[in-house]
Image (cartoon, rainbow over all chains, first blue to last red; front, side):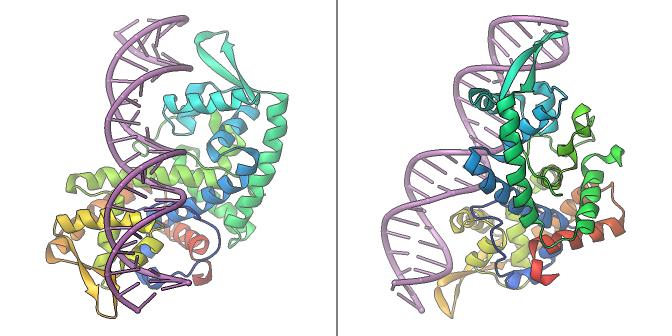
Length: 165
Length: 165
DNA sequence: TATTGTTATACTCTATAACTATA
DNA sequence: TATAGTTATAGAGTATAACAATA
């Protein structure tokens, strides 16, 4: 009984709650892929707007976050985890490295690979960015209780990382 | 306690279940916006791949679907509901109209407005497209039971159409 | 021979502004 | 003066292919 579709992410995606309009009574309005597309446009729109004051976008923020987790990811790992082509990761690291937030280090066990490590300045930036992003997400998900957010997270995790359950 | 982030939609977004990898133990992996971005990349990737054999994409399919619901949407309504700029709707209608799937009709009550109506051929196309899309979505959401899908839909609806509950 | 990071290029989306015809 | 649709254009994001260094 699953239908389909997903759609666009536009300018002021997730600002206020606009008029649902006549079309919200259509079957499309209950379609999970459609809802997912709209929900993600709203959340990432809000997050991008909040991060803008630090000169970050969701993409660079994600990389910074992963670098800050102490796992020392390689660019290849970042590209796989973030669903980006390796060639798309390059300019993201370039920018963060240019700002002194991360550095590329040689992997002693494989000299082809570059390990991304966060700097002290990067850690400070990350701390501020996470606060801003949290606030933005809180707004994006304000219609849900804490319990509902946990449920949503669990369901999405099943979709994205099926075996992890 | 809500964190943040969302990411990219790449080539073979939602094909098989790849290795979660080391990074799936990071906090980002539990972040709702991140999960939402990955889940929507997977679902819309699958849907686009399935619709390709009909020469449709998720975008054009969505428009066709809404036109087929008998609400006679205007382009403005489509643009608001699909979160697309009015200028982005134009080429979508152009394409569907070029294929004879919909027509632009003048609104007798406001001659500025164009009402999009589905044709008989468009209805046949829509029927096939919905079958393909349903199958694709079933694959995208295969990790969830019917009940879980219903819960997910309800939660996403709260986010997207807050007052509708 | 395969893989990591990189560069280059083409293509699709997205964002903005301006124009027209109506209201 | 404001709105629906349209056109044009610039920018961001995405997809592909090729290359150097290393495995």
